Length: 146
Image (tube, rainbow, N blue to C red; front, top):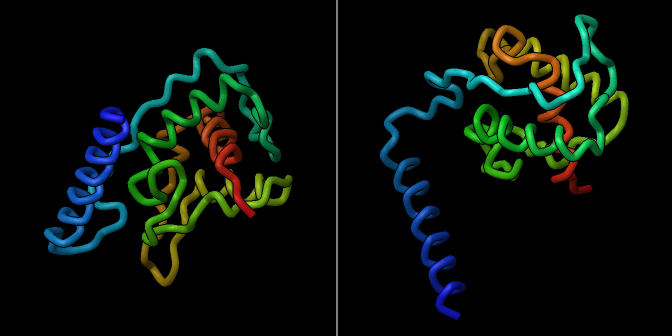
């Protein structure tokens, strides 16, 4: 009972801090000064130089573990904790799990998204390896909702 109360209190505190931060931020910049964080992919199968068109790590437990950490370090700021969007960026849980969406995902992460000169998502190709990007996709798939 005490553990549940402590968890609830911690959750409420985190939510309050997030809300306070969003109110006190003078300007809403989705990407600001975010520096991509390195992802250790040494435990994953190497994918080579040619970019895969479909997720080669689909369902791979180690890739999902690596992807969870990589997502939290590089994607959660905009796409939300555990891939639950807070409205700044698309809710990645809604991405279909299929080859067409795999291709869209990898190209978006590699090249970023720009509309009318505004950067909606920065490119990560120079910062993250193919293995890291596909591991993130493997993690996001575990959060999928229709």
